Image (cartoon, rainbow, N blue to C red; front, side):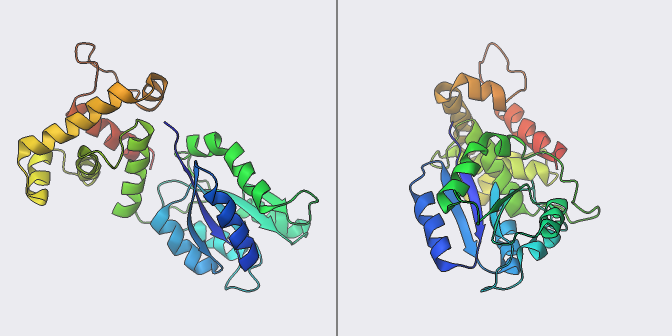
Length: 260
């Protein structure tokens, strides 16, 4: 299933921001989760939205802070995965470039390049999309030891990405139950999941369980088999042909836990 590439834009020029937003709006597989000219506010937006990629202007002359401050702050932020950092800058200092790379920039585009444009920057990230999303569990070497555990909001973002990979849409009734069930296991509650959710949503245990299993069954009927084999690697009982509810939620809880 096609998954959107989410982008956070950190840029101080209004015309540039508008160009980025207008072009991204034409792309069906890209979404802009936030725009700011403040490197400190950018950290908060990053923690809230956990984007796949960040387009980062280094100098932010018309805003607050700068891109290097953002990269430094990013080292101590607890998030489920490190976003891909694309730097776009008018700065041409090799010393600055080297420091940016060492501090966490993945790629640097000079705005002085003859063929530079906001469209080209977005197209570059689209070209890298599969690699970016495929490496979201890769450990961040810059991450400091002892940082706090991911928040529930960050965990839910990661859970939603996993459910999306196997074709379980937020429009499906069982989606919110599955998300909450996986989160409960990550929080240390391995038993009585349906009972807990039933009380929370004022439903019966059986209706909650049925909604979750129906969401799984529908995904296994409609999602491309290659995507299912790629994103759900646990063994499935050949008689049923789909994961049971218990197998499914524990698989994803363990997958996320083991990669944090």
